[in-house]
Length: 129
Image (cartoon, rainbow, N blue to C red; front, side, top):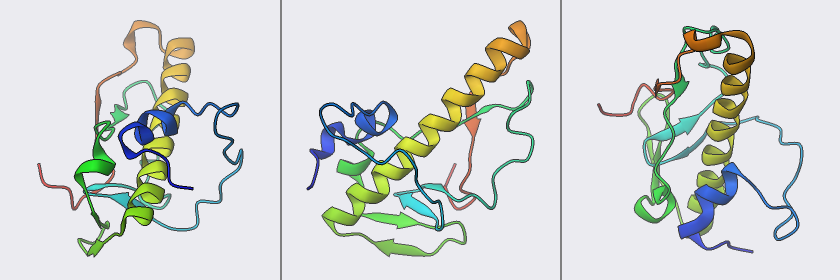
């Protein structure tokens, strides 16, 4: 079932399982991307869960409506149909939102006021500045 794209990123960051059940475990076996936003487990910053490390940049709420392609870490561009753009967008929004939630929790409980809360970490080196 295709979810309404205008709410997809918001829902992916905070799923309401009563309204739309989603899996509680996901195997990250590939790179997910929508537009220039991407997530892959391989280039993830090793120091992400440290006080000085910034949070990851998150895509805008309308990322699925605005993009029908993905640019992978090496710069390869792939066109996406509507269903795939929603799947990829859901994963990117959900994963990046969850990473930031976990990092914020760590920083609030372990870094005091020295935790870097700036969302400036770019996980896709192919994304233009």
